[in-house]
Image (tube, rainbow, N blue to C red; front, side, top):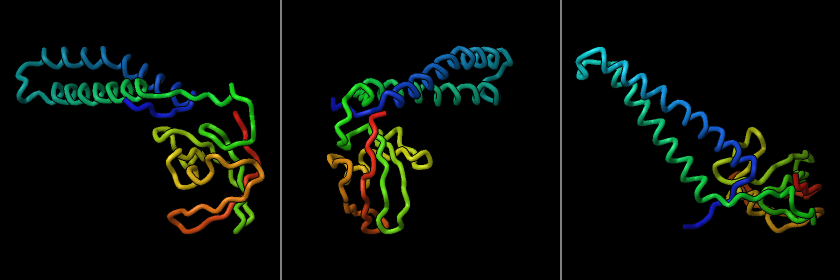
Amino acid sequence: MEKVPMTLRGEQKLRSELDVLLKRRPLISQAIAEARELGDLKENAEYHAAREEQGICEAQIRDIEYKLSVAQIIDVTTMPNTGKVIFGTTITLLDLDTDKEVTYCIVGDDEADIKQNLISVNSPIARGLIGKMEGDEVAISTPGGQKEFEILEVQYI
């Protein structure tokens, strides 16, 4: 079984989602029991809705438990900052074409959210940055074309 990198924040978020789902389990079971008491199960919409909700909840629980079982938790805050871009680092870049600064954090696939500037370790930008050093200029092929960046700062936060 291959390990999948995940930040400490990502693990904590998954564990809190799992806690919420595990707390919903008994409520769903109770809803199913109450719906059974209403009579004929063939035409009982409440029963079918509760069973469907139970199936979705159980699938989400299995999915999260699997992700946590294959996760390799990487906490960059415990590592010395060498200025090198690695998984979990927060990087401030200068787009050399537009002179705009942008900050990204390199995270696992399940944690990625471009709206929060969390980019997947498998994204073109992250792959182009991994292994580079603070102060380096890099050219990265993206779906939108070739982009050139200067790495202004690498933070281990």
